[in-house]
Image 1 (tube, rainbow, N blue to C red):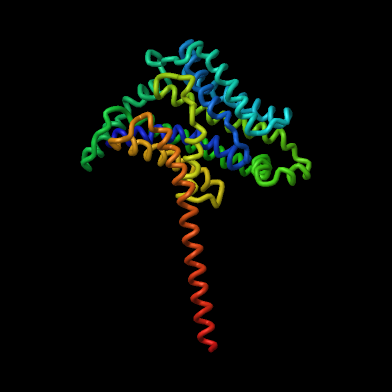
Image 2 (cartoon, rainbow, N blue to C red):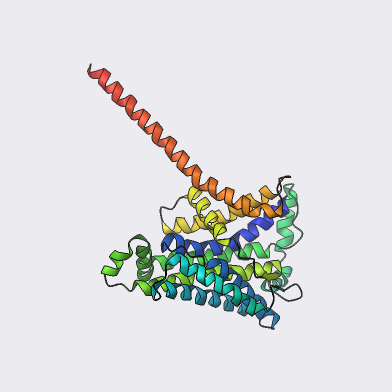
Length: 328
């Protein structure tokens, strides 16, 4: 059980990077971008192909990030310069990326099992630190199951996810970032102030998809393969992470909102892992589980808010009634 949850948290922090990208478009820019389902695979395919060609894994991962940025910028150009609806722009780019990803890999699936990935290098560098033995000894001392592999991936992914979070926080607090946030609130007002909204949207969507592509590159190296269909339903996973995080941790500030997105992604992976351990559910039910999680996350806050509103109204009626009786 512990090993399953460990793996869920491990992959959760990688998917948190993707969720931060989705947060930038859906929440900050108010741009429903479906490019992510293609750019995630683009990141995975570029990284996998580069590693197979002998390029160092860290360089391959950076190349994947830039590939995602280019894909996002093209979507932004289709919307701003081509005057195509934002949703349709994302769909068109996602469709085009399917063929581009097949071209990059030259096959539907590209294996990395016989290649050295960034995580293999990480484990090798981590092996002599003695940290694994100390952590597993601590788990044994409290009666938990020891993890047979290495803690390096989890610890490094936590660090990487929070570095990207802090960079996102910093960007959104700069002058450009504040203008980008304002576009999502009122594009016409920002345009009236002579701000170049087109460039801001293009860069914002590009940054979003660079995060998504980076997550795709890391997932491919973690799983040992890149598949042309691995991005299907990814937008729902991203939204589920955002909605769960916002419902549990709130969104009063940018720092709190991005933290909520990261924690929401981890909680989502844990929920899915626990759900799949139920006897009547199978691996193929993951999309159904995701849909149910999103529905619950969307409906529950509204139900709670509705009940609170009813309680406030009832208390107000009682106060008015008590005040009327007192005057009588």
